[in-house]
Image (cartoon, rainbow, N blue to C red; front, side):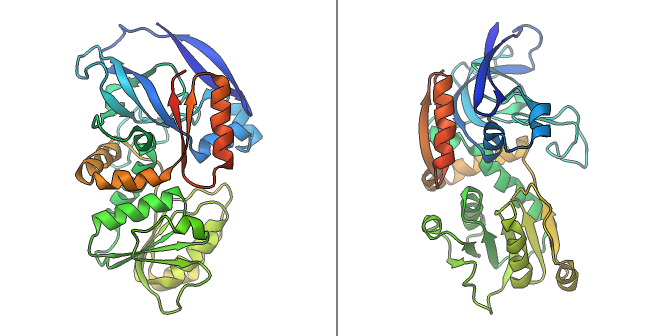
Length: 343
């Protein structure tokens, strides 16, 4: 079959590429028609050309988007009925390791990061790269399940590595990832206190479910937390990590999630003095998608909370609509931009 792929060829410029795909080569794949796609900050760095000339030259042309859902249109094995709603897993491992997770293997391929993402008429996926969704789920929220899996993956690493005193959690970052992390912590640790540390008042107002919230320049001197989660990224992560080290009880942990394009300094003297454990997390794997979908089924009310993160919704019927969606996302001050994929 002939498939249309919508690739970024240079900053703010998309072109249609036609690829020929066979429907008979294997039964280990499914074909999905995307229905809702969500724009990520990483996609924006490619779209605007701020990813860096070397990376842009190496990775373009490339179809963007690694957050999305769709409906199965063809399954040669008959496991999924046509029309089944699924979330697509962007990480594509080519090997298995008993110790290293699929999202940390250097050989794994990640869509929209050197490999074509979900901006296609049809996406061909290995069958373990799709997870079935409830039919009645809010599709605008489901579109960014991949982002929710980032926090879910971080929690799984935290639970395996941090000590078990979990009375007070601190989350630095009042953006999308901070919102998701706070909500997951509140649901998973119902008897624990979750404290938000942010700097933008109108964003912090959306965190109505946390126990306490402080501006980063108004933190009480005597406040202490057991574990900290960093969802800031960029150069701002340095000051966030400094505060985490300061307010952590000895032997607490710091979970790092925010991405920075530049190295940041860390007060290693106090990390050593307090015996702090630093846990890095990046992306997610199939298990995190399964756990996230199960979590949304168990706590359907959180889908309503996540609906707060839907900032812009753009119907996409042509390439100009794609550009408009990315431009809108650049000017949006809160939440995620979702594309209703009707091209």
